[in-house]
Length: 115
Image 1 (tube, rainbow, N blue to C red):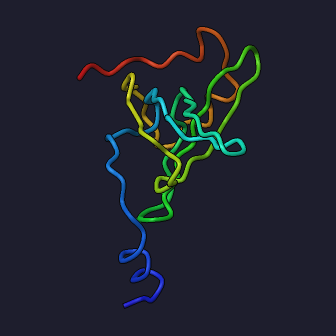
Image 2: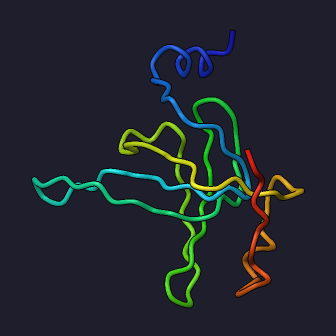
């Protein structure tokens, strides 16, 4: 057995995560430490991709802040992630929707998939 895989399986704790994929709108609540104070901040946006597998899996979220697009990459096993909630399921045909970066306004809408 591969030594790196063995260490990842044994020592990295898995978090319970909801099922989400590219095109879904999610909210990630994560802890921020400023000095000796700790607070929870959220980041709500559209998932552009999920990448990797196992302990090294990451996902990219994009949101619009005013007229500026902000992207953030979160590792799945980040200890500072408090919780993740899925707000909307999106109907897209691709696993990586980087074409959203060039779209604004009505063109940037994603159809909602009913559950």
